[in-house]
Length: 302
Image (cartoon, rainbow, N blue to C red; front, side, top):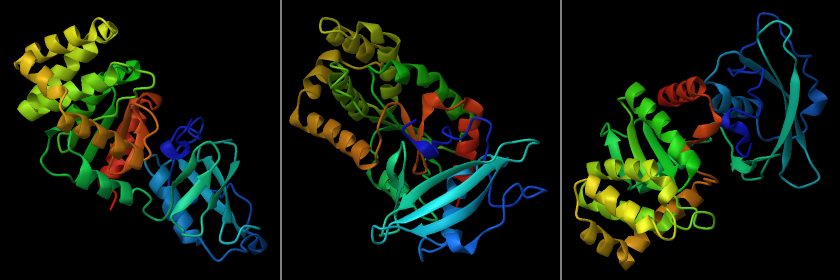
């Protein structure tokens, strides 16, 4: 699991909540000798963990140590975590925080945003820079950005989930943002370029176009890609020749490159990734009920 805090690395047998203790505290007493670092504060760590885990009220945790290390300004944080069901096991994990107080170094996830509001910077980035085809609400109060690649099999699978999300969250603004993984999907950039031109011609037509490309994804081959894309353009009610000409322009290439840069700046590592008010979630790795709870939690978060 590349995104440790996406909710899966500790999800087996665990859930999530604020520091509020279970009816009987399952954790050992705090020993102050393990709090040798001045930052981060326990309150900041708890706020960070609540942001990560607060979508599921069964999880309970306790910050057991915030220790200075041999590297100046880098602190080691140790947390005990369990759920509030009978006989649940207590697990321990540790991560490191950087001197700027804005990042955590987590085994298996690398460097991730840290702080009381770890998703805020990415949320603002999305609000300012997303420009893909959009549907749903006009408001960005609940902004869901799907980074996807039309040649990615997992992205095709995720489309049913995205339709369910749209039905369950009519208050959401949902944006499709292209992230063609050209090293493994040779037709993805061309598909994304067609998508830019379809969106430019008619925003709503993009979703008809994209669904038809996903429906015929297996034909995105060296010989078949242009035909698949042309047929999808026709199904979307647009002129294939005009869209094909638009797709090869420098402006269209720049638009696709800009979307890729946005994904990279947001630390999107794979497709499909859904960014929910700044929180990155790998859609196909999360059961829908958990995904729904995450979106509800992010929608309510201040």
